[in-house]
Length: 78
Image (cartoon, rainbow, N blue to C red):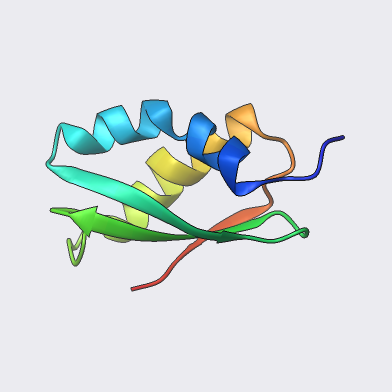
């Protein structure tokens, strides 16, 4: 299995970004480690939104895990 890279995560996020854009939000990839943890920052309307934890889990993490089996977890810098 290929090592997880930031570029791989960026490409895999395209569908999630389209969903976030519907609500004037976006996601920034800050870091990826070899244990499969992806650190992101929600931006735009998603930043500080009360639904941000759900968005992180149900949109971003779900989308990444479906495309990249190396992803073990997605954490957000709030």
